[in-house]
Image (cartoon, rainbow, N blue to C red):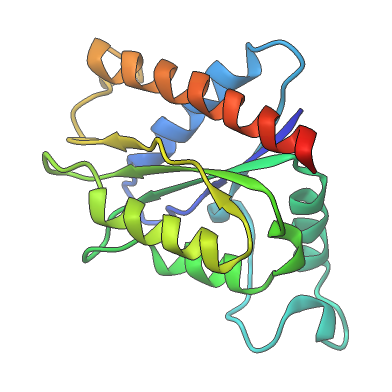
Length: 183
């Protein structure tokens, strides 16, 4: 199974990338799972003017990103919560595409600096996933106090987070496999 993780955090001093990298580690250790991290910090996606395939000339970065999305059997959106929602950079990236998301299972991971762990962003992402014609996994990974769960050396002293991450991965793989078989 090929899983794409879209990391929607590009701000300097970001913390959410640590969660995404840990997710990559845990998923990559699973049997028959191939993971690709699509870190929006590494892609120079233009602001949406029209869907990528309608542009002349076709932007090669968008064409590559589209191919990665199409190749994925399942996806995970990872975003910090900004002003009660997910990031603009994630929304911009997703808006370039449509058919790449069709009927795909998509998990949601949201982070926050406070105790609610991105609950509003996670709900907004699930609604977005439905509007894409995809299937949002009901179980979400919410990460409160994202600025405190990792040590300075990127180690993970917070065992509650690790337990929640393991549960999310277990639920996600079941959900993704069930829907992938139906596709």
